[in-house]
Length: 135
Image 1 (cartoon, rainbow, N blue to C red):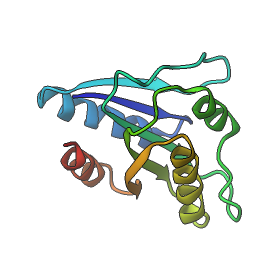
Image 2: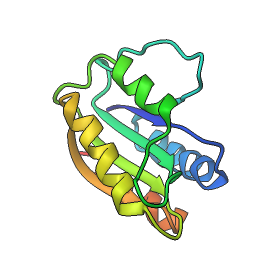
Image 3: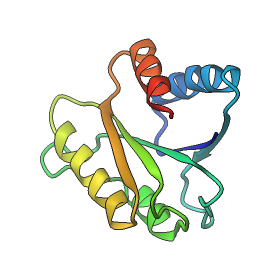
């Protein structure tokens, strides 16, 4: 299965998750492409991928605001229609659920099917749960 992991931010926990998930998925015979969103990244065609992971840190405590670079990138992406996706956030003290909800709404507006959402608190446990969701 071809999987894309799109993320924004320089949080160490996201990089640990990607490294661990990559080794688990590659050992299971899956293919993983990691896409780090930066301002100058071009549009991306996600049509070849069967599964999409999208992660970012919580940046707004009350409104659940998403990083503008990530929102801009998702709007430019093609091929998200009918793709299974999982939404991940690196939690803060507050604003976690609102950020998850806004990220799910963004993906669903592009036609993606959000099958799971998580706050990444424990990396080994998150890797285990995410790997089990790949079907």
